[in-house]
Image (tube, rainbow, N blue to C red):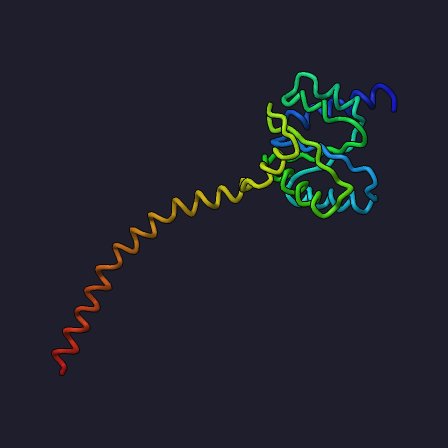
Length: 171
């Protein structure tokens, strides 16, 4: 890899560290190519990506970026999993680590906060952006449905009373 290629990799990694909602760092030593492709596919499905890079280049890219102290995690064969959604990459990597013992989460970063493995698990247990939006929409819709039910209730009560009166008159 020549100097120009290294500079390009550092620039790409810098953009990843700046623009991602969460970056998870993990060891992947001993994983097969098929297992790595499986991880990449799972990350793509949630809008995230996986990147393998030399630790030295990643440390250079981290300088001055949010979560710069994450550089301490970069030892051995490391892989970065990242996504714009602050929860997606953590969810996928946590689930993948449970089914593959060769994939070991070292930690990560969420903005300026550096996460340890327990922190990544905590982020993974949070609802995703889409789940939060769905919860908010359902909360906003609940009062409207209650109002509609209250408005419709008197009409149904009146209809029931009229039916009862009609039945008594017919008898």
